[in-house]
Length: 205
Ligand code: AP5
Image (cartoon, rainbow, N blue to C red; front, side, top):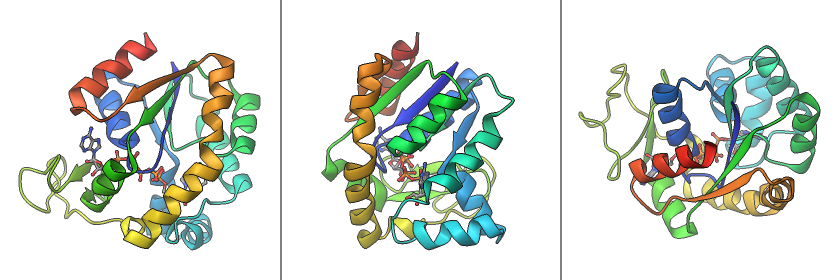
């Protein structure tokens, strides 16, 4: 099964993709995680991507498309988390493969800002927590691998504002595109995580 998890920053795409990877064995491919890995390892790709990420801008299409094409070329099942994010990226994906379902996660801006402000992530295993909503068992420590949790550089108020603006301008048009193709299902995320998981499961069956 080939899935795309679409939605604004902080809506919960990564959290849900992690749940599907663990419970349903569908590998998660997060372009954000791939870029952060490259930034951490100070690769050329990471140095290029960092310039855009920290200020909340999108990394140029040709960089992202090349990276994803290489990653998925021999895979027949995955969740794309954070890709595509522009019309050219969606067109490129169309030329690479056929997507079975696009899940469009929704939430209000107020919820999104609250989720991003309290987010903590594990730099080692990419587990995602929230200081209030989904706290780790021990404050500041990853339940899964014991690493110290961090706050992402792009979860600062200015970058959050920019990311929401960029989402509305460049990514929201994809909703119409995938609706026209008849493969998009909306999933409201203003509810407990288990309910969102169940709604997603129903949407992909
Ligand atoms: P990326 O890492 O993809 O960031 P994003 O799309 O902005 O999405 P987020 O990771 O911020 O949010 P999410 O929806 O995964 O939410 P999460 O599950 O963490 O991209 C980062 C940057 O990389 C981009 O800005 C860009 O520069 C670059 N990039 C990446 N892909 C690109 C592309 N295709 N093209 C160009 N550039 C690209 O949850 C958020 C918080 O909410 C967490 O704290 C979580 O615990 C909590 N939470 C989740 N669900 C719930 C719930 N139901 N109830 C309560 N709390 C919840």
